[in-house]
Amino acid sequence: MRSFDLKGTERKEIGSKYAKQLRKEGQVPCIVYGNNNQINFTVSQKELKGAVVTPHVYIVNLNIDGKVIKTIIKDLQFHPVTEDVLHADFYAFADEQPISVKLPVNLVGLAPGVKVGGKMKQSAKKVTVMGKAADLPEKIDVDVSSLELEQSIKVADLKFDNFCITDPQDALICRILATRATAAAAGADKK
Image 1 (tube, helix red, strand yellow):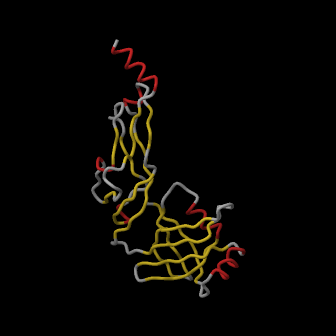
Image 2 (tube, one colour; image 1 turned 90 degrees about the vertical axis):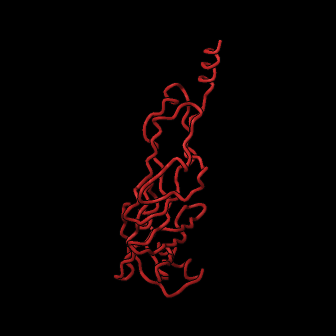
Image 3 (tube, helix red, strand yellow; image 1 turned 135 degrees about the horizontal axis):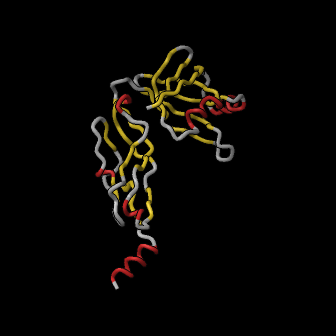
C-alpha cells in the first residue's frame, strides 16, 4: 500500500462551537483512535484532500506535534454542498496488527464473452480486505480472461495468500451480460 504523510496539531477544545471555528480557518477537526491512542487534532483541509480525493488507499503517517502514528482513514464526513471534509476519523495500528480496509477492484484481461458482444458489468468497485498493512496490495486485480457470456466472478472465487476478503462470499464482483445483439445472434444460430 502507498503511504501519505500528514501533519496535525493536537487540540484540547472539543464541541461543535470549536469545530465550526476551525473549519472557518481551513482546518478539519479529526480524531485518531486504536492501539491505545485517542487524540483529538486538526489538519489542514488542503493537505487532507491529497489523501481523500484520489482512487488510492493510503497508510497515513500522522505527525501530531512531532509524534508519528501509523494510521488508516476509517471515516469521513463531507459537507453536502461544498464537499469539504467536515470531520475525519483515523485508526492507529501496529505493524504486525491486521487491519481492515476497502481496496479498489481492477478487472484485468479481455473476456471471451465481451469479444462476442457481451457487456462486462462490474458490481463491486471496492472490496473489504483484512491483513497486515505490509501484505496488502494497492488494488485487487481480478482476471476476467476466462469469462464467457452469462458467467460471473464472486468473492468466493478470489483467493489470496497473505490477506482475505471479508465481504460475503456470494457477493458479485463482475459478470458478462448478454446484449440484444448476442441474443439475436444466438437466435439466428438456432434456426
